[in-house]
Image (cartoon, rainbow, N blue to C red; front, side):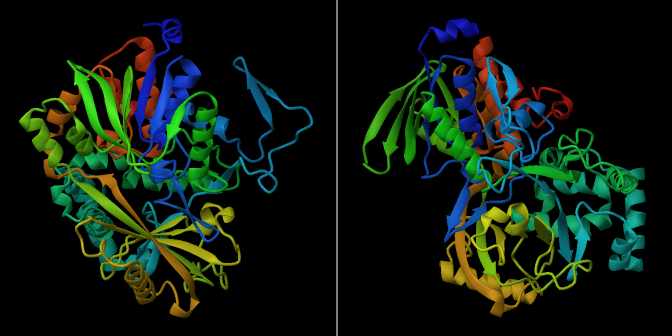
Length: 533
């Protein structure tokens, strides 16, 4: 089917979920076809886990979202929705972009619809000390590790390079092959097991292939040398095309957090003809042969259920919930795999402070570290990561003289920590931060708790049989699984967007197989291509 044919059909696309993948699909359909999007969002906000949570004038970014991609297609898409500070004002008409005469550069102090350009800094907190992340084998790092541990790290790294573990069956194998056993035990094992709640040797190596990709000690060292040699040169280009994702130096960030961009996209697509509804739960999915025909949506506010037919269906809902909603007969093995999928859940405790107790050695007397986030490797506390929202955007704070942090905990909904009252959760977070020397209890001014279920699709449980589930769903020619939970794939925000873009490409091309969707964030070549396809 050609693009011109689609423009004459008046077809509809039902999109389940208004996160990055769902809203990107709606935007792309309106931009490139005559298919009308109908977007159904289960929650009362836009952006999925990329939303911005508001609390008493303060804003929280759930998990931290750097707006950076090696796909030019995604980078240009973001900048079209929200221009970058310092760029000139422009308008786009009939595919041509023109600068607005006399408008001057975009100023974030005067305008809200703007991307800030932020410096990236992440560190590990271990042995009550800070280590650069990714690990850099500098003099300071080696001194902090101590002579004995440093020698063990060097010897084990050489041993790993000489004799690789084959085949790589687990995440433990993957990490040891790239960093050596001693460095794996020092900096990877504890944090990773905090995140997933299971030993690293029970997690598929595929997780490492997606999240860590080409990073190794060699690349980290080469990056450090390159950075040192270039320190007197021009600032980094935002594209940073030749840099591993974990080593990027700068990124874009919406003035008021990631949800701001997705709220703009939701507003824009609604104004252009999309139907966008919140608090809608898809309870039934109807089929005819290998096509989806309609869904039943429950309006949580009114209790009414509506049947909505459509020609195309995009699903970002968790695959387990999608299978449960299918009205057709689902093969027993497919249902078994679906029910065996595991999701890791997430708690953020937002804490407002007068100041932090710790400071950088170069910033004596400062109340603020320079990090975007800090990985807490200390095994004697449950907190896994700390965000410093001031460093993402100062506009996330009602009072910029304060320090606004997010303390992140990884768990299951069945865990005792998930069931703690907000007051008890705040008390735990406060107690742990005092214990590891990050804060003084007297400096805590306020706090809140945000719980996010099904944040991380897990690479264990029934995942080893995932192909059975994927292959069965792929047979529905007008169903497109996109996004993190829609594909049970640990996608970043840009990967989720690319799956939606690729699905729209397929609709325009009349392509019904889904291999190019599943290739996003799997094939290394996607990162280096100019168009991100």
